Length: 455
Image (cartoon, rainbow, N blue to C red):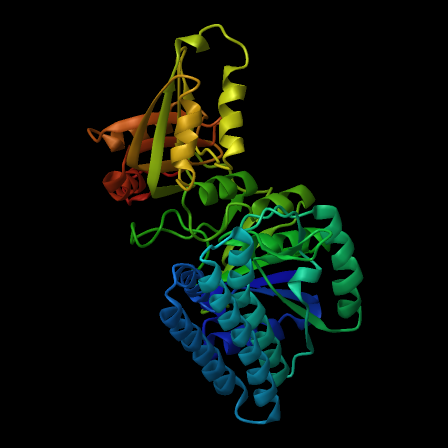
């Protein structure tokens, strides 16, 4: 069996959903399980509705609810026509948006948007899209069955960033999903959403979590392959919006793909690879607009290259903690990273010296409280509007040629921090935020342009 995940652009409207149905029609004999995102942009709109309502802007929030309702109903009739089935689906979707309106009214009354409330609202996008996709599949003659993802994707209670419970997911997948497949059905579920173990309260896996959902389901069911369908041809040597001549990577290693996702590559969510790696399941990234393409295969058996791709992201904060107490002192780093764990803030890049530690973070939600607690350990300086550019290749550290070429390409641009990963496959530089794109372009030209040495 295979798991096929379709992102927001692949289920964004009636035409996209029809293409998705055609892709699954060609894979029926491989026993597909389908995981879908919300319609493109719907999750952002849902979050805005929640924020508006909590601020007391109820009229604006309800207008946005009606806009989303209309969009889903229009696509329903474009897909299904105006028969009884279409009316049934439209009524089911409309009931979901009635619930959304009620939640918005409650938030306006309370004036407080809790993580639990945000999950209840933001989850509605995948709930609605999965119902619509099932109906569209049936219209195309596919034996699809809707599965409420909250019955399978069991998590803890960390709302908005819930942690999946692998054993519970595996048990639920074998109990709920596997019998449908044995009966010749095509299970379809929403990604991104789950339910807390023991309570059943709706949770979400965080932004981009639909990829993660697909990988978790694939691992639970021991899938042959996990296919991630998106709107690009696969993983590229750089973001084509920044580097127009970026090239398709036909095959890439698990570790390389994970590093690229973590450091700015938009094709995959950073967590996607982990469950697949643990089970040794290949992940294939494909373009739903060009299903005949080869895409990118992420696997253990990948070519060894000095540089495979360049990734970058802006909006990074650089924190420096300086303390003479670090010198010859045991446990300082543990205490420091305990602070980050307490504030649920992940660190991307780390560099240390005898008396200082520098780290980068891209989630500034808890920054103020984080800095206050870090000051108990030493002097803290904070630099906003930084960016990260990463050079990734499983053969990057095989000699110094690639690293010296990278530094030469960066040239006279200011570098605030430099770090080589412990595995040696990722060289990361921290630069001014506005320099991320120029640095990516320089590095890509150095390694992938017509005159560059083959990598």
